[in-house]
Amino acid sequence: MGLYTMNIPERMSTPETVGCSSRVVPTCPSRHCSLATFSRSSHSARPLVRTCVYTPTRTEGQTALKLEAQVVPPANLLNEILAPVKADMEQMNQNLKNVVGNRHPMLMAAAEQIFGAGGKKLRPVIVFLVAHSTAQREGLTELTEKHRRLAEITEMIHTASLVHDDVLDECNIRRGKETINSMYGTRVAVLAGDFLFAQSSWFLANLDNLEVIKLISQVIADFANGEISQAASLFDTDITLEHYLDKSFYKTASLIAASCRSAAVFSDSPVEVKEAMYNYGKHLGLAFQVVDDILDFTQSTEQLGKPQGQDLASGNLTAPVIFALRKSTELLDIVSSEFVEEGALERALELVRETGGIEEARLLARQQADMALAALEYLPEGPARRSLRLMVDYVLERIY
Image (cartoon, rainbow, N blue to C red; front, top):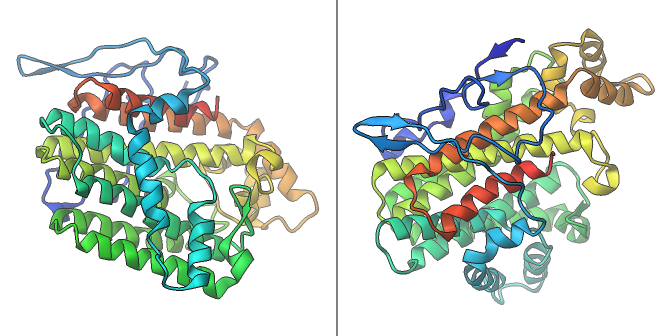
């Protein structure tokens, strides 16, 4: 059985601009743990039944490992995750609806469509959970207004990126509802996204914290870098896994990582805790993106709300395809031809499944999830930390 280790691109380490060290959370040395090695073989057992939670404990300067049993999470897993921050989220949702105010009727209608379009708003949930857990660690009795504003900024930036993504992808439906560009046209959609970016930048500046301003500002630049990187590599069969992870960091994980670290900043956490929270967000975000890319091959068009294999059809080669390309010259030829022949896309989807690309992508998601769990060692036990652990399970549960 062939084994190989993963090298996460250097760009995805904690930004040097905020003056943090290069120390990362240590990896689990167990040769059976997907955190230590990345196996080409598939797992037959559902990983949420029992997995290496990897909780390092300090003993006389040494780092010891404790393997814990994880039970299969209940059906109402998301409700359990949300429980510690339910009131925080209700307040945030109301604040977001008031962001636009009475500036322009069309912009107000667009904002209502954006923030009322459903969605789980997982990013601010994560921000609130990290805020509560780090605040608990530092002895704070309640969250600060800066914690709350940070959650709003995080959701506004994410929403703005979705509005612009829908324009770039010419998407008419999101979360079962019409997109802004479908309802009001491209011009209004672009302006609505621009407004949200501008408003979030204004709120960010008023937080009056240089470290957080640098972190979140870099995220907006990362979005553009991710889109450019993706556009430049369409139908590129030489794309590496490192390039894919780098792009995925820019487009998905950067915001989660930066907002998690920022929440720790506002709790006055020490540098090692801030770094750990950045790593939690980074690896959770990467796991989330890999899972999303797997679902493009495993869910039906009805479940996805878009045609199955749409990313592959557009030339966006994701983790399952990258793994499959290593084993199938037929797939390489089909992708290189950009699916010009009838039935080429359907055959490509078959090859991704037959060559084990999906199984290897599942292992990649599991590996990233394990590293996210490892980063939680710095947080105290409590409802918020438990929800952060369950969030990792929630991300993985969609592909098992």
